[in-house]
Every structure is written in structure tokens, then in C-alpha cells.
View 1 (cartoon, one colour):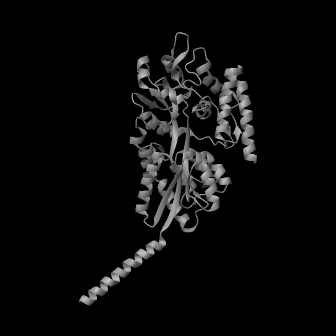
View 2 (cartoon, one colour):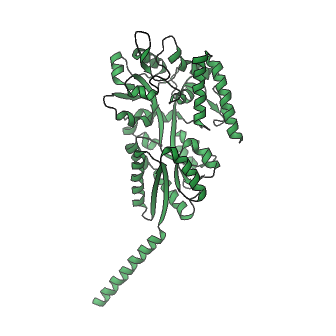
View 3 (tube, helix red, strand yellow):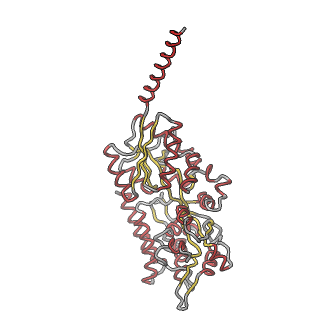
Length: 419
């Protein structure tokens, strides 16, 4: 009896050892890279922990770098067969990563394009080429209108819901000194910040236009709609009763943080920075609607993709990891930890999230948001900066200045796509 029991124990022990050996043999480690931002790192640590608990045979190692070094590190590592198996990249870098063969398309059987089109907010389709997706986000960003509660209460006005009200509220909250110089702006302004997105994807559309054609390869704002949008924008600081000034306190967000601006258009990524400012009471509403009630917004996002380095069992593990970090559970965690918006309506449009007083206006704006496919965002933004400068410094009309900008941007696009 004792001998039989000993044999049974020995057999069980051998079986356990064999299982452990087999598990070790089947274990695979993949590497995930993202740029360093404290909340993002914390959120990803939680996602990795959850994923590994559900997939004990897969280990995910996270590496992060300062933003300034990130693209250089990625571009050097992957061609050498090193670095990440799953990588985070800004949506605007997609074409560069594809052309440099740094990433590979997502497998269509696991990420069918038709399902993604249906399940994600529409702007994510910028990551699609034909019937395949190259990358997907866990979270996205949009614009909304921040307002200073104290300044609006002081002026006896409510947050605006359309462009006409926007101008009216801005006029009521602008202050000037004895010499007529603006000491408090009703609305911040500056194409160097988020205004070039507001003008391009919101105002142009609200005035009846479409900023680009042919999948953002052809400039289409050099027309009546584009001119009307630019004239509206310029009138805010060049009209008979300006409600703002370009360069006021250097940066638009700086003026709002200091309590010297009543209204401020910015992205959802600004929430955390404003929440830490003592004494600043603020709220947020959706972007003002256009003259005929047209709603529009701009969305940007960081995506995750599988690199060309991932092969064999590492590729299979990377696909599983991509499935998890684009799941509803992962998106809710990202919203709770980072404050960035879910990329799926199934998460974003829940009653709690869509009606949240802070996140809600940004999330609701995703339903009508557009994503600009930049080829060089810095250069394209600078063209809008210069368009305004020509009007201010040279007295050029909106029509003439916009024509110069459109010609320059079309040349930039042609050079990129013809290369």
C-alpha cells in the first residue's frame, strides 16, 4: 500500500515537472515600446499584468524612451532585428513606418476590416489601406471648448453652443486697459496650438467645405468655404472689436491656465494639466456648432502596430497582445488611468462615459470627428501660421493669403506622394 502510494506520488511529481518543463519550453517573450509619459506607462503596466495573467505562457517586456528620442530609436532597432514586437506610433507617422517596412499589416482573420469599421469610431479608418488595417489605437483624442467658470459668471454669460454665441461670449469676457490693450482675452488664438486643427477640420466644414479630397492628397480649401472660415477666424483678432490677440501670454494654454482667458479650444490631453492648477475653476463643452448647426471635430491618436521583427511564435504572441490592448476592457482602463478617450463607441458612449462632465464633451465629439492625414504636420501647420501672418503684417486679404498657402501645401503633398 505504501509502495503504491509512493509510486503514485512519484508519478505525479514527474508529471508536474514535465508540465513545468513543457510550459517553459512553450513560453515566449515579446517586447512593447512606447514613448515615456508617466500615466501611459502606469496604464500599460496594468494592461500587461492583466494580459499575462490570462496568457501565462507569454511575457511582455515594456521599454520606453523620451519622446524626443523615440522615433530614432525605433527606426534604428527594427531593421537590425532588435527592439519591439509591438510598437506605439503617432497616427501621422503611419505612411513613414509602412514605407520603411517597420511594421506589418494586422492579420485579416483576427482584425477583419469590416468589423473594425463597425466597432471603432470612424476616424480610425485612416489606419486602413484597402481591406487591411496596419494599426489600431487603444485611445483617441478630440477637441472641445474649455471655459473659465469665474470669468463667465462675472460677465453673466453661459458657455456658447454655436459660433455666433462664441463671438458674443468672447466679447463679453474680453478686458482692456485704459490704452485699449487687451488684458484678458475672451478666446485664446494661435495656429501654433490647436487652432490649425479647428480651422482645417472644423471651421472649413462648418462653412460648407471639405478641406481635402482624394484621401487628403488634394487641397480643397482654396474656395468660398475656406475663405469664409479664415475670415471668421481672423476677425477674432483683426476685427473692429477684437476678442483675442495672437501671442497673448505666448501660448494659448498658458493664458487659460493663468485665468486670463475665458474660452480656450484644446485637446482632451490637456485635462490632466488643468486639473492640477489650484484655484482655476473650469468646465468643458463640445465645440460650437457652425452657422447651420453643422458639428465637426478633429481627432488624433497614437496607435499600436506589429513590427516586421515579430515572426513565428513572437508574431502569434504579438497578435494576442494586440487583441487585448484594443479590447473594451483595455480602453476603459486607459480612460481611467490616462484620461484619453476610448476608441470604440461601445466603451465611449456608455451612459457614464458619454455624460461625464469632463470627458463627455470630448467623447461625444468623436462621433463627428475627422482625422487629417498629414504628410508633415509641422510644415503644414506652419503654412497656416504664415497665412495669418500675411494678413496681419502685410494686409493681405484672406482670399489671397489662402491661395498662397494652398499652393504651397499642394506642392508639399505632391512631392511626398510622388516620391
